[in-house]
Amino acid sequence: MLLAVDDAVAGVLRSLRRSGRLADTLVVFMSDNGLLIGDHHTIGKDMPYRFATDVPLLLRWDGHVAAGAVDGRLVSTVDVTETILRAAGAAMPTSGVDLMAPPARDHVVLEGRPWHRLDGSVPHPGFCGVRTERWLFVRWGDGFEELYDHEFDPSETLNRVTDPSQQPTADALRETARTSCVPEPPGFSWDVGGIDGSAAEVSER
Image (cartoon, rainbow, N blue to C red; front, side, top):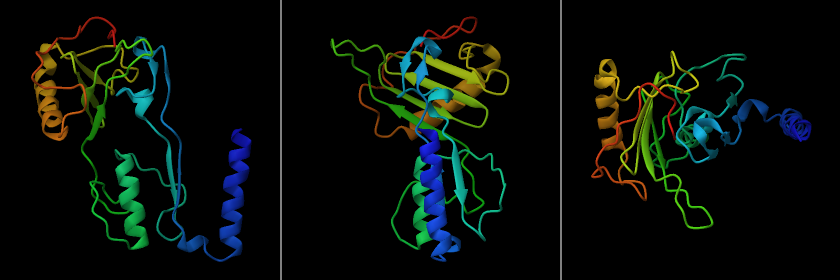
């Protein structure tokens, strides 16, 4: 299947080159987000964790993007929309950031609605979270909170939300999430009392 994708992409680029339009074309190559299969004791895609939200992104625009350049900035899908609009000279307001411009995001907002099983049960409530280059903070609709340090814990195995040394980080990211998740996601409310996570065990979510 991936070989067929490679062939299709190559065919598009060949056609652009032959027609003389390659230099005038911004090529965006992305994939779907990841599927958790047991990570965080869950199966699914609509989760805030890094292996369900990290998505490969490649841009090619001859004369605008240097070949082989690597950019480690945080990017949201709305930034791709903004970048395409600016490249095309179109005017439409978005909440995105033009990736061709220097400004960078300091965080990405993560939101999700409750996930319902066919039997009507809800194994995962709605959530609101914030991802920075180093940290992931998530608050769930039942009040449960998680804080992961991707610098030292890239697999998100240690919930630091109750670690006294990380309270300033948790408080700051919680406030950023509170002001960013507006309106609140379905099934989520900040009025629900907080439920501390365990700083010594793998998160149960």
